[in-house]
Image 1 (cartoon, helix red, strand yellow):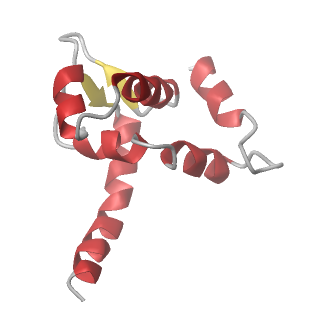
Image 2 (cartoon, rainbow, N blue to C red):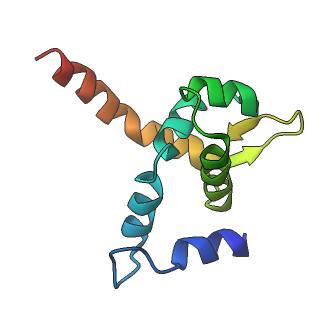
Length: 109
């Protein structure tokens, strides 16, 4: 847990304050971060399945994002070897659902 707290308290690119919202938006704004969380929202996936779901993202970049999301406490590596959301990760994805519904309506305009 100390590792997670340390990662959330670190300095944030483009922010002198390091406020939690800035740290979160910085993490989520990195390439593939949101996509990984989105693809894991329903069920855990193996590395191979996750890569396929992420349009064959680079394995190096995908692993870097998974490491960051694990360090932040949103993703965990399961006993069977697949990646899944932690309860905190599930809560984060639930907060995006109203935005997802809005985006679906907006797309139809």
